[in-house]
Image 1 (cartoon, rainbow, N blue to C red):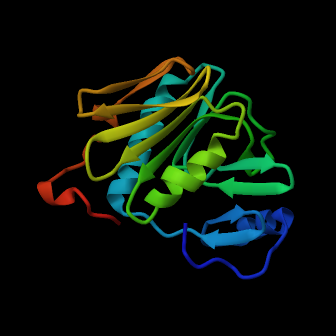
Image 2: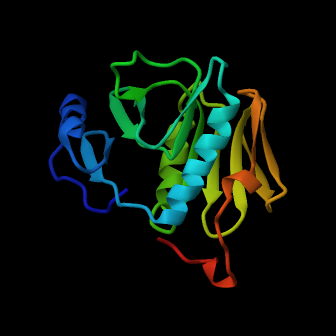
Length: 197
């Protein structure tokens, strides 16, 4: 998310209408609109790899993978938020006319220095409020590592997967994510650690 929000609260309906004609994507948090910064090629390559890897396993199945052009809506009480995750899986889709989904089962964010705080804290806690969500996956872009928050009997539990041989089981949707596939065609060097966008 950008650090430059629009100043005055607007309605969710006005936000959605604006997104239809905007050249830039924005996220919406309880009446405040945030312009999204562009992402570098590495970030987009990883997000695309993940969408292809999971999406191809879901062909012919009830669940469907969506890329970063699909918003997720979170409503709690009088609050309403719209985020653009890097990838999401939905098994109970909204009507096709909607610009968002309400019931994701899996949400994936590719981390960078500019998005880390939001992805690891604000967005994570907000996504955890979605009853349908089973897995929240954070993928590092500067090293071969993924954090998986999986819903258990007592809440979300954290799992760590590291290295190209690691495979994240996604039994909730009947597939898996290999980090080798997630990081296909991504080069790393020792200077990558700690670098951001």
